[in-house]
Image 1 (tube, rainbow, N blue to C red):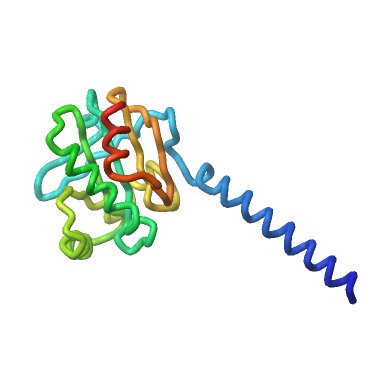
Image 2: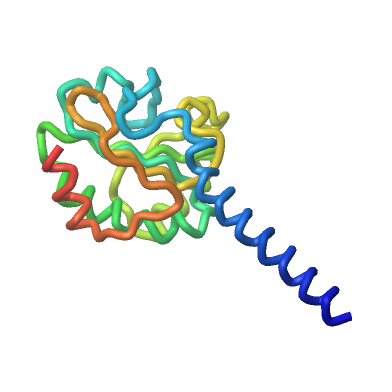
Length: 171
C-alpha cells in the first residue's frame, strides 16, 4: 500500500511539472505576433476616429488587448490608464486599447466605473485579436516607430504606469 501511495504521488508530481512546462509554452503557442515581429494589418473605429497599422508608422505605440471581465485585465488596466495620462499629449506616441468580444455598453460601463479616460476600440468579432493571438488577455505590446514589437506581456504587467510611460518613451 505504501509503495502504491509513493507511486501515485510520483505520477501526480510529474503531471504537475508537465503542466507547468505546458503553461510556460502556452503563451508562445497562442501568440501569432511575438517580440521582433511586425504588427499585422488592422483597422478599427470608434466614435472618435479610426486607428490602423498605418497610424503606428513613425510612432511609439502601446497596444493593449483586453476584456473587462478578465481579472488579470482589471489588474493591468489601471497601469495602462496611468501611462495614458502621461502619454496622451506626446505627439509621437499612440496608445490603443482594444476590447475583445465585448459590446460598447459593457466597456463603456466598466470605463465609467473605473473612471478611465483613455479611448478604447471594440473588436466584437475577435477578428483583430485573432491576428495577434488565439488566447489569453491582457496582451500588452510595446511597438517601435518601425512597427516592430519590442516588448510583449501576456496576462500580467508587473510595472506601474510611470514605468510603462518610461518604456514607451524609450522606444
